Length: 433
Image 1 (cartoon, rainbow, N blue to C red):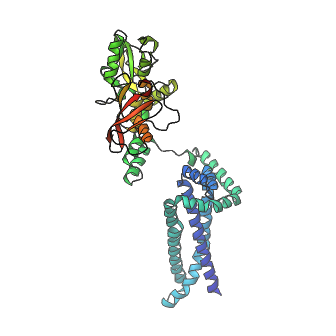
Image 2: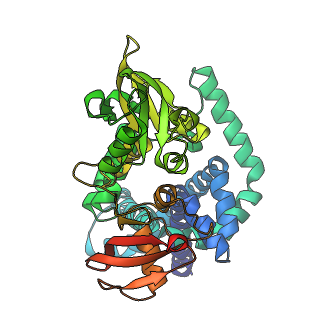
Image 3: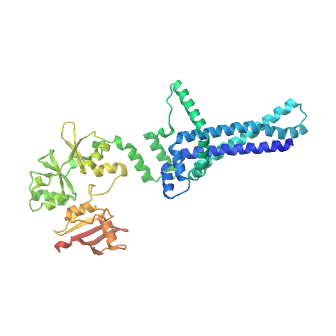
């Protein structure tokens, strides 16, 4: 009878070990799971996903519940497990060793404590912790309902414990911190990204974006601008024909408009406006506003200014008010994405005028730039950003050099291919054929 009772108590001890494991699973899974992943599971109608998200949104109180569960399980394990093991092993020890009752009990307690601790730490702590970290989403969905039920059952006690803990912290002068307030510093984010790159979670491009984004706010205009000496400008003091020649030879689409000196910038000239005003030949009617920023203005501040004003370039001035350089939206974006080869890069011209009706474009030219240069309008619902991609989809198959296709605006002829991408094409306006 005594053996049966001890066996039952030992069974209860293992029950409490697995209860402890459940609460450890719960604790690590609700801390590690990403809310964005749970929102994705909710959209997929995965059971328990909504409840799991609710738990993570109230992380503090549910962590208190897991701590209460771990504590109760551990106390119960010590209360029941140790005596049960002692009763089971005292008789075998007495048969093999001739010792008095005090020594017998001491040996049995030592062995019992060792075994209970071993099972508690391995099965109740280490294994569930590793499982929760490795299978976070599955575990959090599994524990959501029973954890929520435990939280509801012990909610009054949890609130009391939280109040007592906060009171003690206030007495000793420590402000309670919420788990939701825990945030990584910029350097920690960069380290995390670097470690993710090492284990293959991120590729090098993604890691570079994160590293650059973290440093984004520390970068100022003078570090990324086009220097004054490299600025290609249109000049009020030159004739229309001379300025137009500068435009055609440069291959750019946007130009600072100056009055004699680069220190006297009147605004920006867009090539679309220039072409539309070709007959009037009056730059003063097409000059656009330009944003003016200092050399030490953060690019994180310049980008919202550009978006608000819908202007893609800003004039950078030095401490004396003179022109220091020009910064474009592309310059800023490149600080995050890395170098982007386009119209502003050395040795690359995005278009070449063949005659009044025809132009030669590189495939990477933006749709809006083709609209501006040729005076045409594409449908607003097209998905492509580049003219090469647009022509590719019009052709409807893998293009080859010489392929021609047309839409309501133009005829597109493939002049060169770069593997599977159109690298150069000739565009002729239909309306002027």
